[in-house]
Figure 1 (cartoon, rainbow, N blue to C red):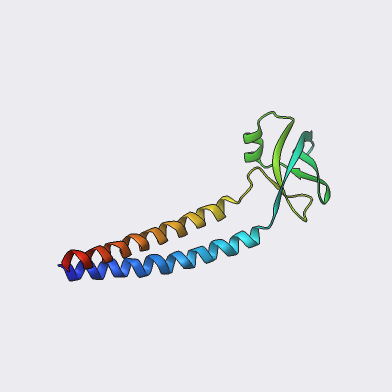
Figure 2 (cartoon, rainbow, N blue to C red):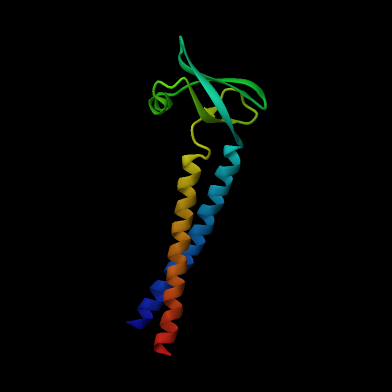
Amino acid sequence: MDGAVDTVAEIFAWLGFGVGALVAGVALVLYLIDGTWRPVHVVIDDAPEGRVARWFGDDGVGQAVLTDDQVRQLGTADDADAFARQGSRDRLRLTAHSPLVRAVAWFAVGFVAVGAASLTLSIVMIFVRG
């Protein structure tokens, strides 16, 4: 029975660290692809194409049509703090970091935690039997 626990713990340790490192690499690539987002203060106006946010940034004047979700989050506000993509004058979001990058990074942390817990169990089993 102890041999089975050791084997399962070692398998989970290898898988946890291996998959965790792989998913962390994917999170890093997604983070780099996401680019740099600068904080901006936007003025919101109604336009024929919908609610539009306009701002002054490092790259000049920017303008973006708000998505339905952004309109819902901002409500009837006339101005707000947001984040504009550096190098682009029409990309805007309300969060500093991408939700996808954050989710993938938390998956990586979860896998590494499984690996660490399994490694700890393996080490404890060595001393319990010894």
